[in-house]
Image (cartoon, helix red, strand yellow):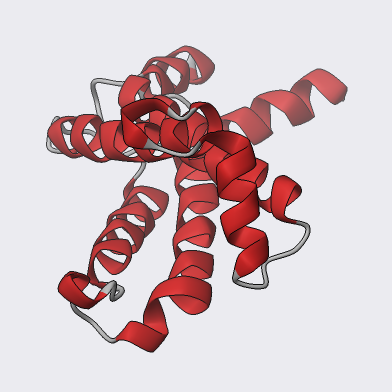
Length: 153
C-alpha cells in the first residue's frame, strides 16, 4: 500500500504535458530564481547574504528575519535549480509562486506596477510563469517526464 501510494503521489507530482516549449523558459526563469536565491543565501552576484537579507527583512517588518530570509532564499535558489533540471517542477513552481506573492504584497505593491519605482511588474511576471509551470509541468526534456514514462510502465 505504501509503495502504491508513493508511486501514485510521484505520478501526480511529475505529470507533465509533452513538448519542448518549456525548456527555454525553465532554463531562463530557473536561472533567474537561482541567482536571486544565491544573492539572499550566499551573497553571490552582489547580494547581501543570509544575515544581510535577514536584517533587511526585519527592517521592513518581516519577522523573524532570519527564518524568512532562509525560506525565501531557499525557495528561490533550490526552486530555480529544480526548474533548470526539470525535477519536481510543479511543487517547485508552487513554492516559487507563493514566494512571489509574498514579495509582491509585502515589498513591491505599494510602489505601483513599474520596476523603475521598485514596483511589482517583475515579480508578477515570475509569478505568472510559475503558475504556468504548475498548470503544465516540466515538458518533454525533463526528469519529471522521464519519471512519468517509467511510472507508466
